[in-house]
Image 1: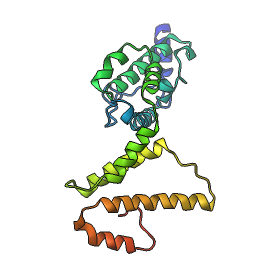
Image 2: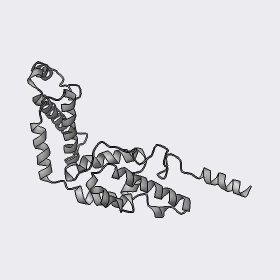
Image 3: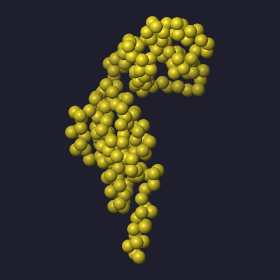
Image 4: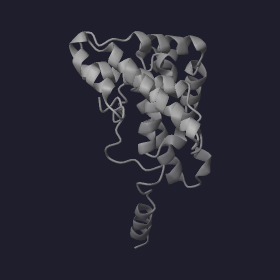
Length: 217
């Protein structure tokens, strides 16, 4: 009876789905695929945001931020659960970096050390990167790709640029006017890059009042 009681008690102590030590049956090594392979400074910002979003949905941000430490747990079973979660987060990172980086990550003992190392090496926002993004955005054209593909490329560039140079907004009228001006600028960039076959549609969009968003276009 004692063994049965200990077994049942142990089962009830397993972390629930809201606990950072919880791993579901779907949390396999290849479960996290952000669609971006980290290659270096050129895509670290976009990659890190995508990774953080994925880890947030799995309640595992604390493992890379250092907020969920092995020493925070006293029970051996909890420490084992932490080891499993930590190893899983490292495997998720491994699956989303270039092959050249795998060997260096494999020998790290914690996901927090892995994340800190990558951040120190590649989180180098400088004017050269901002210049490169600005130039690519200004010169990107529709070309032979579908409109949807052209737009997605442009949006990815906008998102990275915005993440590097975030706006400081408030509820005042001037802040709203400035934000609206930037959105109109993005609309103009999108329309300028379209092929001439869309000239009539472009003219109609420019005449619309109120001005539609890029997504609506």
